[in-house]
Every structure is written in structure tokens, then in C-alpha cells.
Length: 161
Image (cartoon, rainbow, N blue to C red; front, side):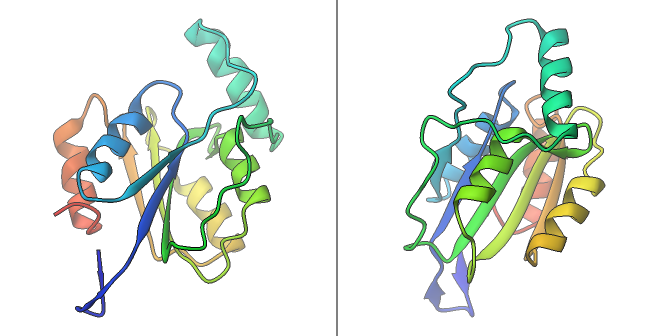
């Protein structure tokens, strides 16, 4: 991505994905030369979708911060951090809560890419925009299923060419 038309802006996509939506977005951004960091929790979620929804929604509701396999990342070489998170109960995924607690984003341009089956991303965006200014926010509804719509939204946000 270019900043001011001439300087190269180095970007990283930091994301969590349980159902593959974030992985799909990561594959699109990686093709644009954006570095990728996938957040993984030490304790995996249950395999059954209904149990994932109950466990994940509860953790999101109470702003839980599960332990990550790797919690601290060196973001010093990046100008822009693109945060990718599923929306659970109107909030960021718990793994993203841990990342945000452990990794200061001061001085970084922040872009939010949220993905949800319900498309209910406004609470998440409002919450994050209180913590730091968002350069942009893109809400994707089930990008793995709605690929054309996801690509169009990412292009509109200038994350894809």
C-alpha cells in the first residue's frame, strides 16, 4: 500500500479465524504482499459448532483474554496493522483481546476487518475506535461464502488492488 503516493507503507494482517473466514481474507491480503500473523489460542475450541458458539460467545461477552501460543509480536517494522476478527456476540474474538492487551499499537495506522455470519459489526467497531483511531473499517458478512462481496469490500477499502 502506498502512503502519500510515493512512500511504501509496510502492512501486517493480524487475525484470528475459527471457521476459515479469516484464513480466506488472509490469503487475499497475502497475495497483495501484506505480511500475515495468525493468532492461535493454547486451548482449542470445541469441534461442534453449537459448542463453539456458546464458548466463544461467552468468552467474548465477558472480554476474556485466552492464552495465545505466541502472545507478543514485534510490530516495530510495520506502519499499518490490519486487525482481522470474527464478531462474536457483537465483540472481537477473545484471541484478539489478548493480542490487543499484549501488543501496543501506538503510532500505527489501524484498519479493522471484521467477519461475521450475522453482519453485526458496529459494536465491535465502536469499541475499538474508543481505544485507538481506526484508519478504516471493513465489515464482511461470511467472506468464505460471499467471496465476490468480500473482494469488492476489500477493494473499496483499498486493501486489494
